Image (tube, rainbow, N blue to C red; front, side, top):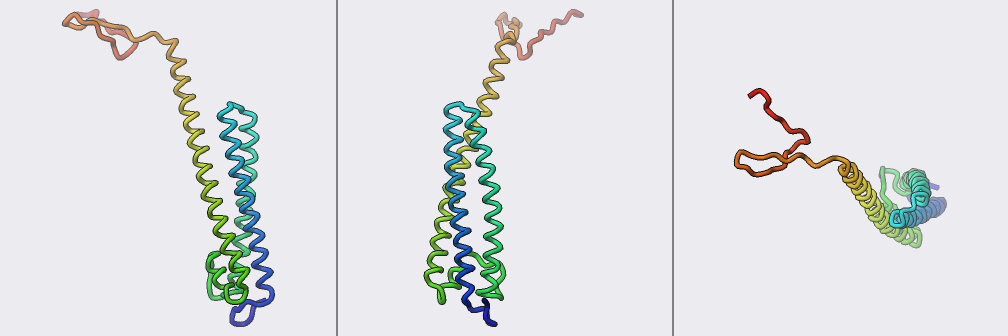
Length: 182
């Protein structure tokens, strides 16, 4: 698989193809997660708590799958990096694509394309996630304010008192204080 100087051997192509499969799987999971966020937004708009709960469970499963695939990709990248350039630790996908360019040009191009597609999908999914998060926070804040308003309906307004100038003003608290001593 590896020659003494770290040049690509016959097993390098197999390692790169396996890495490409993992990147493709990550891309697919990100697409599914993005679609799940769309379902969550629709459920919020329709006020469908059962659909929202189901979409949230699906989103959690997809996030777990993303974490599993990320770890798998990192292991595969380390292995491919050791085969291509043993002196380099922590090679990025771009580094691996460059190292493959001389001996496996089509795989290098595929790796660069997969990297670009994965990054674009991750950015779109992250944006959608932030939109859902904002919507949920806004809905929760609005609900809290509505509850406070409803609770306030049962409380009588603060009493009004007369000032020394004979004008009526509303007090800050619900209780009035009368000086009975003096």
